Length: 394
Image (cartoon, rainbow, N blue to C red):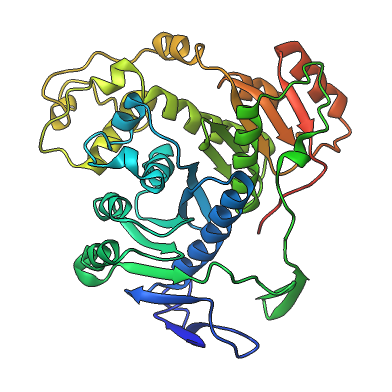
């Protein structure tokens, strides 16, 4: 396949639209089912690069959940504790523990289920039946993987009435060393970002606390590789082999840190007893449960425990989750890792990160206020390394 005709571009009025190889060669992917669109394929190619690099860096199968060219979640295929299974709505999935790939997607999807609604999925390895069963029951636009077991492919082909997007990528394909894109009729050219992220990037520890635990190194690598494919400015929190909060595309670094920290806090609070014991109505759909949980934790648009509201979600009126209770729960969280795609200009980012249990930080360094940021880390007992490498992605 040398080109693929798209229904339209970013928006329905942007026609014609297609993808093709400028050198006239074959495209490095095959569409096995459905008709992916322009944004679908942007998500597919970015997410595939993320999981491919993460697998190479860690030696562990992994998955990513993408929305609008940034990851809402990315994770290694580690077993899920029982609490996390329940929080991710996968405690009823048969054979989950026997499929590292399914565990990876359950974790990636469970990071920020509201943002992952209608996601694009990337799998580092051949899709098995357990992973396909998990994908089939979620609201999703499509999946990219280096291959599919026959029974898994048949199951995915039945999703969305046979219109689900299933893409097979050539795992050996490497992009050209120079890449171009056009904006406003002007062609931009740059070298492809082949920069390798691994433990060697974490040696320059600049704080009084110099030890990076093996788990911290793993989680910092997860965060940094995720940031390499996240719209900048961006910050990512990571814990237990997965991203747990992404702040993408913000103009201010502190806004990235706050946004990602809020998502990380919500991810932790979903696993609290008060949330896990919520008495949901049996007829409540999965997406409505996600919305109700977010409302219960964050009280954004409505108080789901209020009279006249709780009846839509629960069989009985839950007790409110007070700010004091949430703070007490989060104060017990520790050993979270944080990566930033560019330097922190002020210590307020570290203060916000510490409120979400961050104890390890990786950032490029290079600010005129590096000493101030290091001093805040030292005061809070946080280990921080300078990578010397910016990871902007636009």
